[in-house]
Length: 224
Ligand code: BTN
Image (cartoon, rainbow, N blue to C red):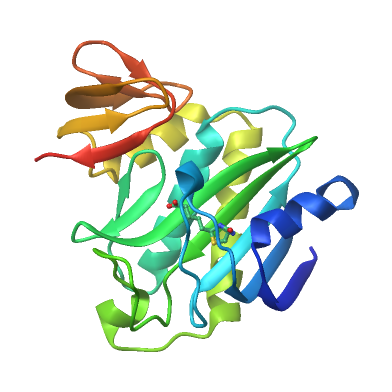
């Protein structure tokens, strides 16, 4: 498995997209800093030195939004390996005490899926609000390449479940570790704003509300 290590790059996801067609499954791009880090919904992603800014190129045999949940679970288990208990906010944010420690951006590029992971590791300052980091939670610094190795091992495990179509295992584990289910939520999709109680996720990883409505993408605010 190839890991490309860069100093500063605009965005590891954009870099990954450029090389995706000639890259092998699990080729990984790691950058010390990103000058134009991208978040979901075209937001900027603050990426100073000390974070794990990484993109993994996958070549799945089929595509399902469950890949998003697979990535979230891999980060959850990575944090758990370092004694940090996090929760999954649908679709794939990781929160510690309602503060964001990791965001994930999935993008398609011809035959590949780029999994962009931004994990706040040795971060002690951010301009954004409501963030936390592994350092802020533990007062310890971590070796970024070691954290990446742990993350890739977990990613390989959950990706193998995905390729074997063991969807119920992925779904059940995600549900057990979610902080979205059971909450009243407001969801901004590209078309509308929807409120309701989040009750379940389906076999595609879509969020199900108590009204029966299924949401495949959007930005969620937890009400309580
Ligand atoms: C979000 O929560 O909005 C998703 C954030 C994803 C950030 C990561 S950092 C590595 C990769 N490269 C990017 O430009 N974005 C993703």
